[in-house]
Length: 115
Length: 110
Image (tube, rainbow over all chains, first blue to last red; front, side, top):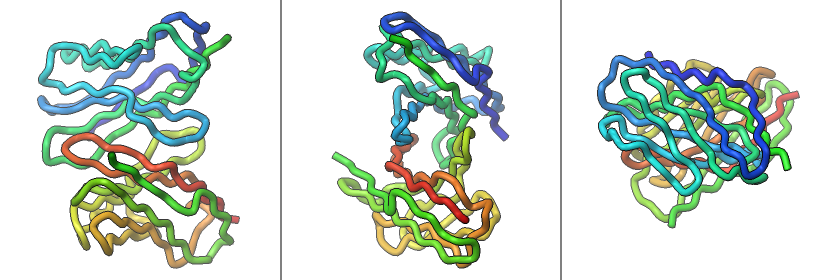
């Protein structure tokens, strides 16, 4: 079974600064997908960024980027130019390759952006 | 574009009462549909998923059930609620390997 670990329960960052959230996972699969979801106070889960394991290039979406280290089974999220609206819970999630339907989530990191 | 709806947004129910939560998706056909539960301060736990009408897979044995009477409708039910059923329930739809979530239902069992 896959496991996803987020070792930072809470983090804070000053507005306009950069912050990195950590995620590690454990799997015996070779083909899989990784995601970061954001859950603001409204509690709706929003897909932030995704990474396919077969792609060596790190995914980027505007101010959000990942550092995917497949051998180390590490998948960190970097938020640049942090904004107040980035305050939220952030969840790392893992999905095995095609044919699987189960997302495994970490327990989340609560990020606070300080003005 | 695709839209996912859930209702009700909040619900307070006594122990032993029945439950029905509804989820509908617009703007797509034959999506995979999912029910998750999020307990306070924790991540999401997959409860059920469906790949088509009438096809339901259960991930966690409990007193909840799910049904998919129409292609874009997914219902979570219980005949008798337990205190432990309290939580935040999220419906999601997916195609390929991505999942998109609805606004959720906060259920409090008293």
